[in-house]
Image 1: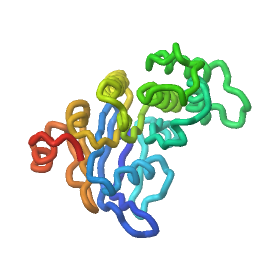
Image 2: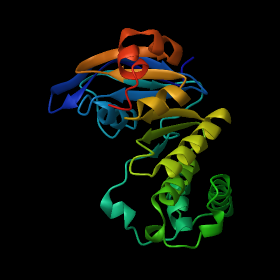
Image 3: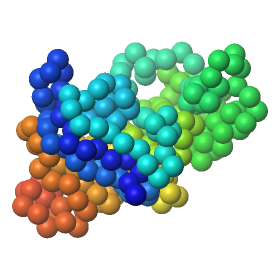
Image 4: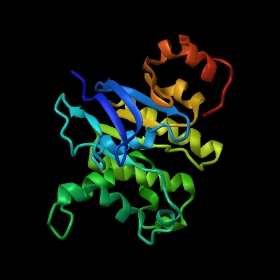
Amino acid sequence: MPQLSCQDLCLGYEGKAVVSDLTFGVCVGDYLCIVGENGSGKSTLMKTILKLMAPISGQVLTGDGLAANEIGYLPQQTAVQKDFPASVREVVRAGCLNRRGMRPFYNKSEKRIADDNMKKLGIDSIAKRCYRELSGGQQQRALLARALCATRKILLLDEPAAGLDPKASAEMYDLIMALNSGGTTIIMISHDIAASVKYASHILHIGSQSALFFGTKADYLGSEIGRIYAGLGGEGI
């Protein structure tokens, strides 16, 4: 049974469709990369999965024990977010807000979850440092740790390596792969085709108005569109 499935989705704004006929499912432990041209609807799809916006038609369903509020999210950073005046520990603990509810303070369990995730991502030694003073790679690790505080079941990542130097990008992809190997389902938007076909188990390629491909990485590489974008040495779209 899919952990998350999208059925006959039509997405857009003010009734105007950006992409239609999206149907796919993600099972526990999958690593799905969503690729496509700018404006094809990738971020709109992610917002719909997160219930930040409603589809024009179709539905997003959760299964296999996944609740709608058990999805961790790592968005693209804005300039304002990069300059956020809080400690790394405060940023990471913010991922426990849904657990905390109306309580004014985090409990011991929530603090331990945050500490464990900082240690897992190698940032426990900088927990007291100001977030805005960190390198781009360190900031992304903090945000990934925050997303893990929401859940370890499934993570939605929007261009997690954007703006990072090659070394930090490789480290970020390795961290995500390690989380996936540990059982966390990954859904990631990426412009980096090389990284997508290196790490993903499945590819969803969205084109103008519709899905051009959904299936395993092996099938994608054997498909016409896969050969065009990945097989001929394309570095990204």
